[in-house]
Length: 114
Length: 112
Image 1 (cartoon, rainbow over the protein chains, first blue to last red):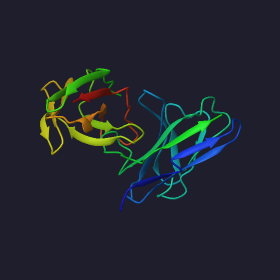
Image 2: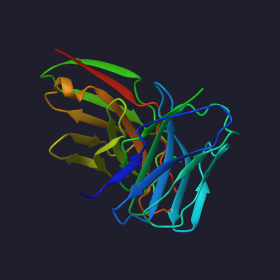
Image 3: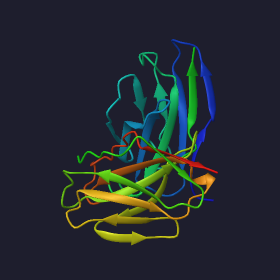
């Protein structure tokens, strides 16, 4: 089965701890994305990567970091600097990082920080 | 990037046709219009994409007038399972780095 996997589905952390969210795709897509969604809101872009070893900040990158060492993987670290980390995090991929291409989304990780 | 405006919410009943309109007054020449569907606690799912006139697939139809400043997603004979948030986005598929912006979307509630 081709697709995007995110793990875990639910994640709980204490305030002040860094946490890394996993995202893997086997679609052979060049571009990958991380979005954040708060209750009742749309998606906001955190980071995106057009190619391996390259990534760019999205609209709300502060307090987050990413890496893209392999084409298949694009992990997101939520650092202790992120003021309101509790949210639903969605990873996506597309053949290229162009605005009109279909993005394929993973099932999401719901992060709760207390 | 072209900004989109769509109704915050809509209600419908099972079996009815639902039309959701999206305004994108400053759409660029190379932009395409794409609609996504999102169920609670899931990632969005691509529904349909078009550039002009009309596009139809097994799920929906997309109507785009000649000036392309708006578009209408049409869902025929909705069922309860069509209750979801629907996002309208515009973007250029040939411009790498031209990121899509997901706004608040339209919350469609289908009632029995």
